[in-house]
Length: 439
Image 1: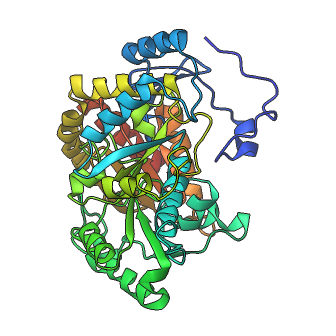
Image 2: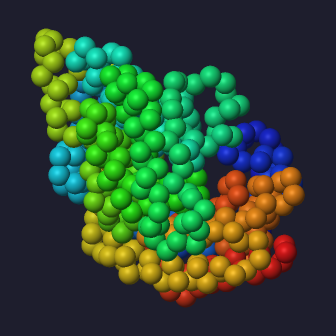
Image 3: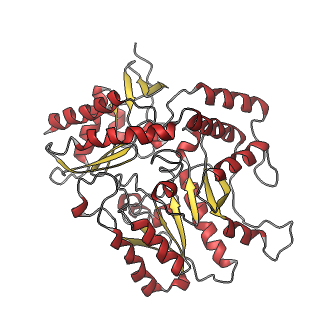
């Protein structure tokens, strides 16, 4: 059965999409269930990226559908400023119980990009309110991805996401931890903790009194699935603590299961001052993100020497803590716990690791990385076209019934938490066949 494809494909300017190519070869997704999409031709497509890293519990979960339906019939919207609704407080409390000690207070946003900009603004406002307005400089990392708003692209370290838009916020960038000696590492690489010491050089150059925060992803996701070297995050924590600089973990991809824990902070044993989240919190069913802050940061704003009726942080969104999104998130957290999905990620991760590293000797592959239910493959560049081969392999996989992500010189997998061992072997096999077909 063929499903109708819209005649006017120009009306929608699609995000992060080669629109000209798409119009010639439209890939229309019409429905989803479990680990599979269905396209306009009625074909089943295995979802190898859990949507966009955000549908780990599988598509079409009846529990989330029921929660959303009930909530939209009860309270479809509540003003986000100066008034509250029960589910936002319930969800914030629930999230706080799942975070490392000290991360206790949640500010809700509508996306990961908004969460990052919120975290950066909180960091600057924290120092400004203490009379330390010079502590405004932000530090990100090469190959880091922090969304698409101006704060996020400023601290982000992926050139094509940034340079077309001109001058951004003032920011510096730590070196990438993707090192030659770590090629084909399984899990956390052995080498690279020393790259955190580049932060000391930036402190020497600018002065700690002028640096507000450092932001990194515990595991870089969109930059190619780059796990942190052993000891790297610990070293960043030490340096930030010693120099009175806030450490922000961007956990939009890594929080709520992907790493085999409720946060990368938990899994890697390092607690930041501020943490962002989005994506998996609602299993992709509703737009929702947020920022979790240490109690000292929150309490500082609560004890400002201002009248109590005045707003402590002049920031927020119309859809912050949207009641329907909160209902979806609470149902998602129930699923993660009731279906033991965190434990399932832990059990399936070694199977993915063995399967993906089995591709090591194939032509065109120059590196393989993995952690939790995430994996990245770097492909040798075609002459003059470094992004071509990942696109070609991804399209071959789509033809075979598998959705994998391509970007830059990498292919990326972010498998559903409910994936089976056979499905892991199937998608890895499809990648191998696709590589052979373009060689």
